[in-house]
Length: 417
Image: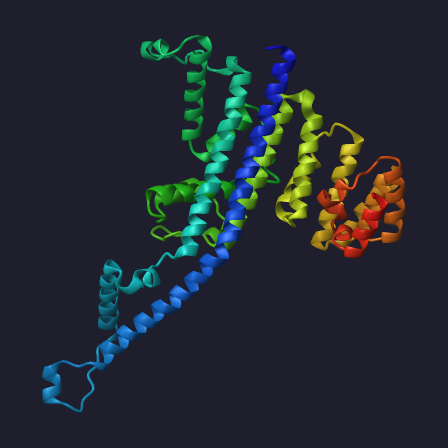
């Protein structure tokens, strides 16, 4: 393979790693959004059915007396104290659930469809980040095989399975990566920072929150979600809303799931981008384009948490050109506009106007200002000069407000007809 083809293959590999991670994460979010409404609706109906069953059992226990008591005092209404009632109710419910009488087990189950959906999806999110780290480590050691420790050895049996030196190196790479990924999450991040010299943007990404999610995944897998000393010793200092005690059983609420999801999505993209830029420095232009595309897609979905973190990250990196920086600044203005941060939006827009040149950039400014008259004037000129195409409007978040208006869309169709 020529050096040029090898470089192209390596470049495609880094793009695929980042893309596969985003596809997996987007798939999980799409799945949750699609299934969650039905799951929670079913749970609500099941809870109501369960309460009716429990109430029926209680009424029977409190209204029916023993035969002996009726013979002695027929007019006296017997009573059962609350503790006895609760114990008896629980025993009956347990028996009912065991036999799944008329489907009552579903109605009386403590962990219903919504909880199981969120927990399983949460586990998939953590697994997606595991796969990302594994892919990045494989990419690193395949590009820099000399980074493997000289003291790593293979048994004679392993060597007999290898046809050549490359297969032996592949086995050593797999073992090295397994060693890294079997360590706890905090040490994995230290490995990327200290060994691979990859920045993790600690001031932007909450790695403590991601670490807590990893520890929660571990106790779901090994301790039925019940908090133990090992969990508390590994999570460190927690935000107040995440403080728990030994013996408490953890769950995955919808708010918790989203908080972890957005943090891991942004953190994964940051790690992948930094690896891309460090290992393939000649391809930073393509990394810039990919970052712009990702942020734009998040803004189209109104995902301001991920878009905001990635825009903060983009402000700290060196871009390949002034045009790239301008495009990122346009996206930042769009974020501030969506978030309703009017003062910050105005200040940033004023700075942007001073450097805007050409009809395409002036059209961006007009779109951000909701100045339709100026927007269409610049778009006509940009279309004549080949600066813009009709396909740009459905995929550019800065034009979304104008493109979603039927009258404006009709005008754009006329311009590009």
